[in-house]
Image (cartoon, rainbow, N blue to C red):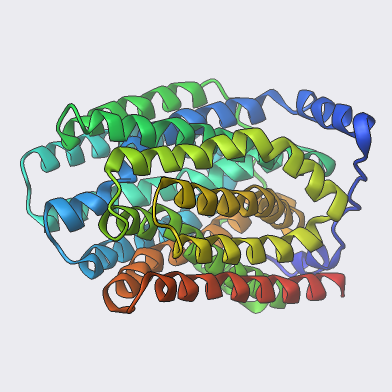
Length: 425
């Protein structure tokens, strides 16, 4: 970012509309109707993409740890390397999209990742050595890094500032439609066909998502790009030099470190420690997705009523409670209670977080901003399975495992409280 970004960062977040009673609910529906068509197209593509990948990725840790009998910490190391690769891809792709446009990276990454996922399924069917699986996991993660920040930047490009909470909430719903369906179907399919075969279904889902994104009109075509030839290193240095962005990056890292536990440590814990089947764990993830579908719209109203400054701090505290409750789970019902509390935090925090990124970003380098923040998030994702694996292997009880994880949420709340304080200045 250039020096002009500092002034952009110092501007306050826009006032948050007050939502009250029936007129407010009507206003929220109307705000969704007024969104650019491309916001809906990207949300649908996210739903299809997530549904395909969640068929298999939710159980990849279970496959490595239980089916192949490797230690949890080793899977954590592989996930660490893969997600560090994705982290660097995030920063690179976000920066590149400011110069060449959004759609080439969004569509191209989905097509190539489809082939990689199909290859990974073949490796699993052949019981390929772990190192070869690790290489494909790295390739898949880096391709995801070419999709996520660019897709979010595209949505921010086509939205007015007062539409961003609704637009990012819709993207969240798209993701969770996929999570509502994918893990449950994946768990059921794995009971009838080999786990590796399910990867072919996931690969087909990626191709469908790629086809959907081909219809999206690029808001940043190459000919109109105004960014210069600044490098990814310049973007990282500029972010590190800005106090507000530094705090946002730390908070984003902690948020991802915590959220990743739901999709790595949680699955292993519920199958290994609680003794639930893969199909039952898949249904727990369905609870997550359905809760988003039911509560995301009311959650957007809550964000508007309380304001982003409050929700950025309050949601991590709810996260901490939800993850602590995981340690008390003994069966499906108690696990569903914990995952519902976690989901309530998710649907409040994620739109607030994406809105904050869009507001402090230089409009000419929005892809770069989402890319750098995405890089910090992926560092958290990278260390998430390793952190959870170490806790699973070393902590004396379930309560201790999830109490330690819950403290990450409290640290996240403290960090975003500092972000809000700096933002007010």
